[in-house]
Length: 385
Image 1 (cartoon, one colour):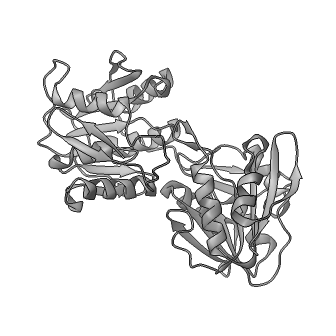
Image 2: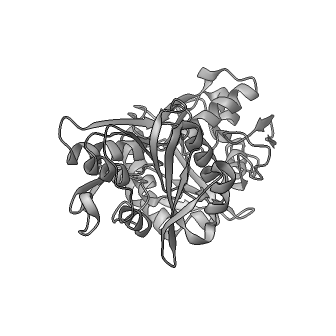
């Protein structure tokens, strides 16, 4: 936990789930820069926050907590960001209803007077969010984006310019930058180009030639990524009425493959991204009949899955949290999988070879076997004894 100090107050903040070993803060210089600009601490006029304030992409609730007195709406694609926001509000003695939490799949507010955008890693997600919010803006809406210099590119500014209107940037401070946009008079209201659909290639088992649905922000939304392709070529052959989990499902291709290969299985698709779970559900419904059994959960890994209830977990864990490289998410997924699996149940993981997940899996499961490998990827199997 760390303390974010503004000109008017200080806030104790932590990421979610809170881990005392986590070296990363719940905010960065981009959040601080934006808050100083809103307060007028840089010598400019303070921003009037008396109207309808919307905060988009607040990563761990730092902005929403600091602005809770103005009762903002928070829009995020991350379940963990919502949990972090609730925890940080409670940690600072702020009522839970001070911030209205919406997901990226929810209908945006009808009117936005101040729009604050934490620029996401995914340019596609930013594009979709700006398209969805543009109809709620008016001529006097204040639009400010914030991000680290390495996150704001020419393509980022072009999106603001094309969807909102005239755009400029601030000077960089502590390697952070602000983006200012003004709604263009008479701007055309065009719909978001998302979701995208593409056809899978051949030679990858039951999902060959199938159509994949990808909402904005999904990893490799315009093609099958090479890690997943390698995984599809080495999935276990299973049969019978098993419960299978596609953990960190993304667009659901891996879980769909398991469902098509074993029609008696019930597949649960889990991700912390609302856009991912929506993509997985549309991909599944597009490619299966009415009798296919599946569940779709937005959540914190396997936290909401009963212990000893799963036969097989399939996992392609991320090794980034926003811009930070970390194995914290993978560790949590592996521990959650061990708890959710029945005795004899199996966790199958595809990962970059250099990450060395076999060592981590041996510590958690007491065993790990390499099923397949090439110079870049490995498929690993761990069994709950």
